[in-house]
Image 1 (cartoon, rainbow, N blue to C red):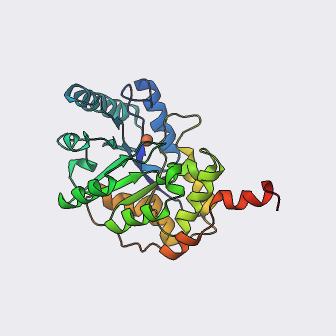
Image 2: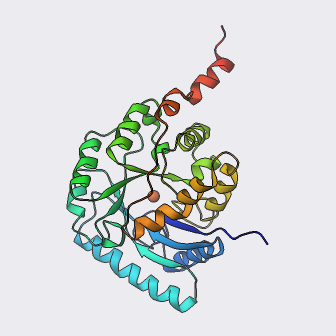
Length: 272
Ligand SMILES: [Fe+2]
């Protein structure tokens, strides 16, 4: 019999009525049922923390999460749920560190943060440095989705050297965010720049939990087994326990010399 593969998902939006993810508790339960059916053993809720996040919002996160925990137990859904957050990179990011959901398991060891999608912000390197001073490992959510970084590979390498970890969206490998993102994702994986693959699920239809298994099937033939295990399970397990990840050395030369997507297209559209 084929060996079962299990997953730990550190990034998704199943917590109801707090962001653009699940709108109500019924949807949250439907999402978690789907997660369990996809062999996801642990799924961490990461509602967006934005400039509107304050004590009232924080209380709401905690209340909704505890209501959901009770309902998950009642419904007998076999998945462990945890609460953290996806911190939007803003001047307020340091203020949120006081909240119990700001870091994984409130251990002050790992946090997940995202950048604006269309404009490179100032001060990311400094934020990474400040996290390190506090003993926190920052994890950048879906680096492959920031198109402005596709032309600035050296910036990603700098952050990587500083110790910033990177989490890719499984859907990026399935073309959910376009071909350019898909190709850049594969290149990042080939160069071992990525530490986690997560669902970033928002619903049970398009951005759902099935993407984990499906994406793994897509990349199984070009990545070694030990790396796949780190990406989908082992690194997440360590991060949730507040432990150090196994070291991963990015292949910087390979990453710098990989051809960008538009270079390949050029030959098709530009007449010589
Ligand atoms: Fe997200």
